[in-house]
Image (tube, rainbow, N blue to C red):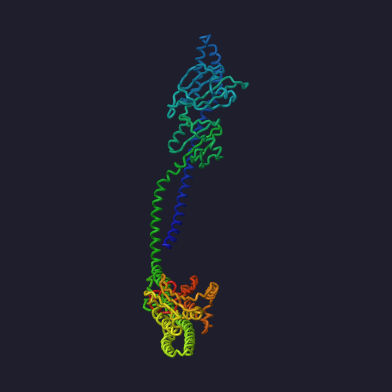
Amino acid sequence: MYLFVIYGTFILILLGIFFIFTYRHYQKNTLEENSRDLENVCSSVGNSVETQLDNLSSISMNLVCSKAIRTNFREFSDLYQNSDTSPSDLVASQKKAREIHDIITSMIGAYQNASAINLYTLDGSYVESGYFELTDAVNLAKQPWYTPVMKLNGHKYISNPTVHMDLPAQGDNQHAQKFISIVRLFLDSNSQPEGIVEVIQDCGKIFSLTSRLESQNPGTSVYIYNSRHELVYPYQSQAPTVNFYTLIADKHAHEKASRIVATDDGQQLLSTYQEIPDYDWTVVLTKPRASVYDSLNNFRLFFGLIGSLSILLTLFICFYISERLTAPLQKLTNATGKITIDRVLDEKKVNLTSADSNIKEISQLCESIRNMYEKLRSTSQEALLSRSEETRAKLQATQFVINPHFLYNCLTNISVMAEESMNADIIHMCESLCDYFRYISSSRDMFVTLDEEIFYTRCYLECMQMRYSSELEYTLDIAEKTRQYYIPKLIIQPFVENSFKYAFNIAPPWKLQISSSREGNNWILRVQDNGGTLSNEKKQELMDLYKKLDMNKELKSMQVGGMGLKNVYLRLKLLYGDKAIFKIENTLPQRTIFIFGGPIMTEPPHSFLISQNTDTGMTGG
């Protein structure tokens, strides 16, 4: 699984980078394509609107510059002012109006390049030509274009889309009925105003191509602002909440260059714009970012499906390859996991199985481990045998220290009994001593059952009681379940001797108690005397001394005298290591208790490396 995760993650990262790069590439191309389309539409809209405005401007300029129009309009003005008082002047003014209409018709053509043309005198009378022919009077001051036209002094003024219900509208403008006018002054030879010309055109005609392009490009919105930064398109509906002219100015956008901009309400828009310099108009086109990438939806779905299948297939291949690679390694791992100390030391255990791999390196590794295992078995068994013999030699050395020490004490007791003429007792004691000495001098067994150790300890105590008679009292409180536990040979006798040597220097009777118990996985022996002569200072001194012993140094410098309790401590540490138990209790009044023990063994050990075998249970040998 580890190999699969590593390979799978690596392949996933590579595929992820590939798919992300590819998708980003298509996304970038889509954005560039939409940007080009938007810029082309913007250019087409700008050119179309500019053409329409040029046409209206040309008409107005031709009218202003036409001598025939100027002459006839001046005569019309004079006649119309007198028409209220002279009917003949009224008829004459109507004739002049028809002549003006004919001149205008010949100028704008039969196809009506303008919806209407109005010629105003400064007193408010005017001639309308176009779809209708009429003369009338208006209050010029109330016209929305009057003030700016007078200030422009002959320059053209373009109005906002204005409703004219009396004029026919075409196409999308039939319901809105909105028209745009180009208005300018007639100036005389002294550059003084003498009239106003207004050329009116249908918004539907001015923005016909704009509407058509907008409908042909779903999602694209066109906004056209005049020189006063007022929205003139779209003219049918209410102005949008966003002023796009201000937006592109704030974003420092470049003309004819598309970019993604964000509105104040969080919308992401692809936008571009183009100026119409002759009229200072601005054409702005926008397209929602979501609409820009609509074409990627199907591609994204197909791409995601192909990507998912590719990833699943790749993961399956990675898992198959990983399994093929790691199966022999797993088998080899399981085989090497069986290399334990018991398997190494057991001659009946079979050899490691082969990894059965067709990979040359793994097969060589398996063969190397098998050879190493065989060498380990032979070397470990040799080392164990050598260590066992070494430990046996050390135990025998400590035991041999006890043997002459014990013999020395017994001979001393016999000499004392001989001085007191205790011949019968001496004979009995010598017989017991012979049996006991055979027991302690045997080097064949380093471990005996507790029952056997207690038996010969009793023999020793009977010998001592022959000497001290009623002055000595001893009890053996041995738990029945502990009798068959195996313990080190001659482990009790030094404590008994220690009691006779140091504890029984008080007035008799002298009392000695030996007891056994089981505590957890340990056997425990207690040797208690009633001497009570061991102070806390002496106890602490002994325990500190024993804990600081250098075992190798002590084994080399063993001597017959003074090795009683130290001998026991050394043997317990040699056999059991950190699991050895050795304590002294002197808290009870007139009592000293030596507590010692070790792990329970129900069979004699096969080797003497017990202290090293700390990870296995001690029961069962």
